Structures are given as C-alpha cells and as structure tokens.
Image 1 (cartoon, rainbow, N blue to C red):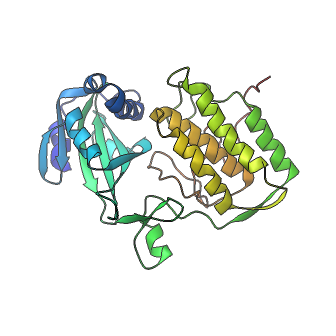
Image 2: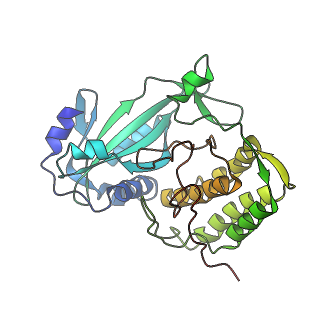
Length: 304
C-alpha cells in the first residue's frame, strides 16, 4: 500500500468526519451513483497489491457484483492515518466476498484514503483465511479447532453464556422499549443524524422493539446467549434494505439489549473495525452513549 499512500499525499486536508463520508459514499453507490461519484476526487486511485488504476463507482460496483458485501462498519484507522502526516485520513471497511454457492467466502478489507470532503483512493486487501456459513447463518473461518478460528474470522463465535432474566433486567428492557429511539446524537465514534427517510423511522423502531419483545416473552430465569442471538437474526434481516447509518444505529440498540441482559462475550453477528474498541473481557463494543459496561447512557425521552 506504500505506493498508493505516496501517490495521494498531495490531497487536501483531511475531512472533518472521514468515516461518515465513506459510509455515505457506500450507501449512495446503490441509491444514487451520480451523487456517490461526486464524493470521489477526480484523480482518485485504487490499488490491489502492486497493481493500481483509477477509482470509480463502476470499479467498486464490479467488486459488489462479484459477491462482496459490506459488513456495515466504517472506522478510521488511527495508525495508518498517522502515516499520512495529517494530510488525509484512512477509513477501514470490512467486507465478505462469496464467489458462489458452496464455495468458501473470503474477508476483504478496503481502506479508503479521505481528503477534504472527497475520497482520494482505496486499497483492497484480501485476508488469507476462508470462511464458511454455519447453521445459524454466522460466518466462521474454516479450520479444525474453534480456538484457531476465533483469531481470524470476521464473525466471532456466539457466546455460550447463560444469564438470569430477572425482574430488574426486565424493567430496564421495558424502559428501553418505551424510549423514543433513533433520535440524532453525537455519541462517539460516528454520531447519528436520524433516520434516512421519514418512512424508515417506524420500520427501525418496530425492528428493535420486536427484538426486545421476543426477549421479554421469555420467563424469568436462565436465558442463553444462543437463544438471544437467534432472536436477533430476524431483526438484522429486516434492516438489510435500509441505509448504512440506520443499520448501524439499530445494531447499537441490539447490542444494548445484549449488555443489559448481562452477556459479556460476542453475539456472533458483528465484525467490528478498529474504530469500535471493545472493553477488555467483552465481545462487543459499548452501545452508543455508554462509557463502561456498568455505566449505561442516560435514558432518552419515553414515548407517551
């Protein structure tokens, strides 16, 4: 990637929110390719290994048509950004590429170089590991032992934990359900500006609330991570057609339920970039607004 960085150091000062710019670019690729192209520098370059060429919406569309799907996370790589001497920012995005039915998929990282409100370049790098689908639709790396897979798979194995659903936990979940969700906020790392369209707001709220209802339907007592993870899948499926920012905010609510229940290990559904640090001993990043696993955000206004 060194040659690409050197070629792009002439771009203007880095954008104020480079990760949000990349997220918007990826979302616009499907809905408005012309608007997406406007976010690319006219001299943008793309590199794969030692091979390079122009970066266009069309070239990235080819990657998508080859079965590569963005996994919903865009985060600034601070180490790579530091190597750009403050002249640009590096935003890492995680993808999963499935060449065909029955064939193992491969994780792909696309690192976008972002200048002043424009994307100046991208570098593609495939991981050496291959992944395959399990019965519960997670993607896990092929290999003889689970502990060998966990270090390299983009989707960690779902937790084997069992926690207690108590009246106190139930009350917290009911309060979360009653909240007026999906309001704009500036919680790190990206903030949120609200639903992409007015029509999306009720879909988003219903998706999260239905997941909470499925958990509340369980009787007080032991509840397993596997069962909660399985309840999460229909919600994630419903979020697929929505804008990237809305999917990410909804995922934050799903992870918040996970934390409220008291699980510490992964849900098995998410692959998080370096911009989403995970607390020591935990498998998911803190939900938006939380400052520690035992320090949740202040409750939002409730629906009356």
